[in-house]
Length: 116
Image (cartoon, rainbow, N blue to C red; front, side):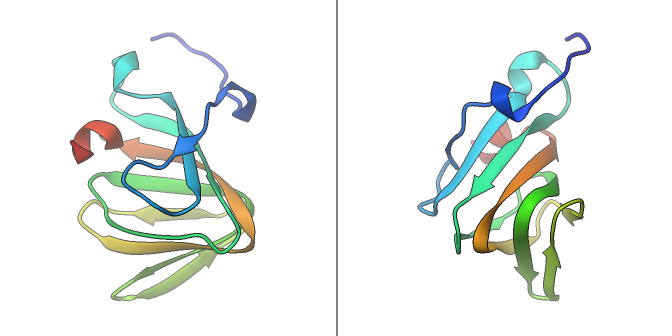
């Protein structure tokens, strides 16, 4: 894989695998690129919610809107320019607020292969 610039315009957003919520993701770098991480964008519809036990370490950067992530330990809320880290094995509920949210994410290792 070579150095390249990635933008939202390069992304094809698809419904998040295994989720019924209006959450869409698009990988720009993943296992097909032979690198160790997945990088992409996510779009959350207003008031969307999903629950999952993290199969990978996930870093989510909020670009637009607001998201809350709840665990047994409590809830954190992030807005534009803020980062949420979700460690592998943690059970989380991610909820967008009234305006929805746009995020960028990085996972280690690749989340698609970790879920299979």
